[in-house]
Length: 154
Image 1: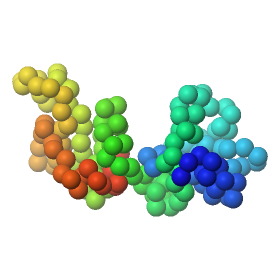
Image 2 (image 1 turned 90 degrees about the vertical axis):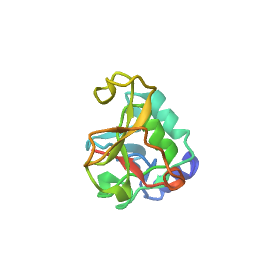
Image 3 (image 1 turned 135 degrees about the vertical axis):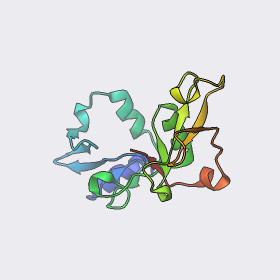
């Protein structure tokens, strides 16, 4: 949903979030309060990063936050493959929700990383498994690319 609809939902007492968020936004005491992944609660008007906050407001991907999709409410934040790629490029680790193995995740491998010092190569996606430290060259299946159950790996 877009921000106009998300704002209406907040005014009706619902919590909203973007799919990858661990926290949520809620209408409280006449303003939007941001409930952050670290437990902080911040008035939207007091944001330290307005460009980031306004960018989020421009999103059409808001969802109702609940106990299934919001870590701050006891759930797990998930997102689509496009978001997973965005987070990989930022240096974060991602995995499919159904992998549920703390030792299995994807990570962007850049030339010069410890796992590829011996091989001249282009940046690629590596798969970490229990059997291998890091296996370069992971290729997404169609199921992986269409999935919306990607999540952050610890």
